[in-house]
Image (tube, rainbow, N blue to C red; front, side, top):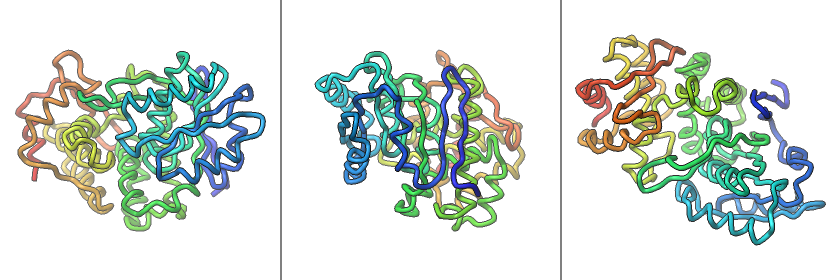
Length: 358
């Protein structure tokens, strides 16, 4: 496999996603030439690496660090306000830039800060987790959580560039890599079935960031996201398919006050979506069962609390795909054939939930 892979995202303007090793060394080249000030948004766990990045980028530009709380605790409006304060006190202008250096929550927050400061400054995303590389950092969805739900406040703001340095994944624990792989599995079911074949061939080895099969899966998942968002940035049509498993998954995250990993919640959500597809007469028993088999082979959860349906349904009503009081779900007609199921009967939803309730 070649050292560096570049995947272009169409748009006006478009941008490149670069995948490879040792890419941080040339990160400065990805920043806008006119940027005189750069804010690096990072979690506490990457403080030392962020400081090294700052030292590397300092030269003709001023580089500031904004350390934010880890994971979903960082996706709050108060945290965004802290970043705005840093930028305001440093006199950031429209030609300056933000770098999101961290997992999906960090890149979501950094993108939101960039989208809202002076109504939009450039953001370069440097994802450091599997989840962030294949999903959060790609596509220009930015946002924060509120008490009412996840990602209900945000903006569509495509990045200036995305740099996926696979060296950053080498220190991830197996649990961390596996949780992020749920989004890769999603790509396998809705777009690139080759991913499923690769996982089934070696479920334990597939999550090793140094393996060729791992990189192939990552690149296929990113390719899917790039193609979809290049055609539909603002989720007016095709992009909705990326929410497969996310309607219930986000509701579980909310119920758990974001203590569950995103990938774990989406894993359960995909099994629910598959069962909903099957019970609606759209998906074969074999493909529905394959969801459970593939996810469990990776050690991901496929069940949630049996008595939680009504609570989760109330949260799903506020899902961004809902239209008025009408719930909408992404379902499968077959492998790589996602579609929308509108206003399913509550008895159908309840029956599908019984398949994941435990």
